[in-house]
Each structure stands twice: as C-alpha cells, then as structure tokens.
Image (cartoon, rainbow, N blue to C red; front, side, top):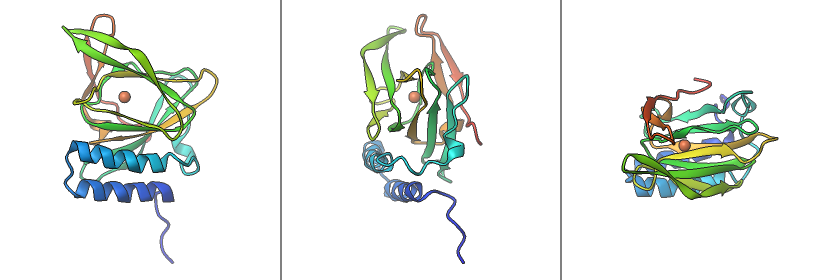
Length: 188
Ligand code: FE2
C-alpha cells in the first residue's frame, strides 16, 4: 500500500509542472509565463482546496501556505478574503501570479512618482479562472480587496520565492511613507 499524497491531485500536478518550469533555469519572463498557464489550469476547477486552507478570519484576510519549494524557488498560497476585507497598499519584491478560485477580487496598482504614490485610475477585477501578475519589473505595488461585502473570496498566489519570509513593504497612500514587513503564514 502506498502512502497518500500530501497534496490534493490538482495541486500536486501544478507543483510538478512548476518544478519542471523552474528546473529548466527559466528567467523571470519564462517562469511567469509557464506559471500563469499552469495556474489557469489549477483555478479552472474549484474542487481541490483543503477546507483548512479556505477558512476566513473574522477581522483580516488569511494567507495559507499550500506548498513551499525546498529551494525557495517559489511558493504557493491561498489568499482567503472575508466579506469586505482588503490589504494595505503593499509590494512583493519578487514576481507573483494570482489566480482567482472563488468569488472575485479587485486590484488597484500604484506607481511611485517623486516620492508619492499615484493610484491607477482603473481597478482590475479578477473573476474565477482568471489570472494577473505583479513583479518589480512590470509593477509591484497594489491594493487588493474582496469584490464582495457579503461572502468569502479566495485566490491562489504563486511567488518567485518563499513569500512568507520575504522582506517587503507597506505604503501609506497619503504620505508615501514606507514600512518593511514579513507576512509569514496563517498555518506555518
Ligand atoms: Fe499583493
């Protein structure tokens, strides 16, 4: 008798695909392109996320670790929004691909101009099955929020390092003041 896989089938397939993508020594552009295609497959079905990684918190969003590459080449998390919850304006300091699994979310990009933060006029809405990307080279600062005030939304995020221990930043959108933070995980 073989031991059960510690990862649900679809996530195991995704991890296998990611391992192949990063083993090929891909640069950021190729890694993100491969990741986005794999993530679109993963979030095309909402039948695999473990219940203990889909629980909202009554006060703030939750970030659950789903898989951490042993060499820190990437990490996979579920981002669980309670009704009406949002992030501060923040960055990632690595590439990231976001895929919507359940519900919907809004992301508004911010640009740094002369020490100030300028919000994009457009707020991007991400629906189940859709993906979007962030990185220092294409735009890394944004504010994300649950599109719904009356239900939970969940997106799956993949980052180009162990995002839970990555030093990154939150921004005061009014003053442009910057503060470092390390997010950790709700479950690790
Ligand atoms: Fe983000």
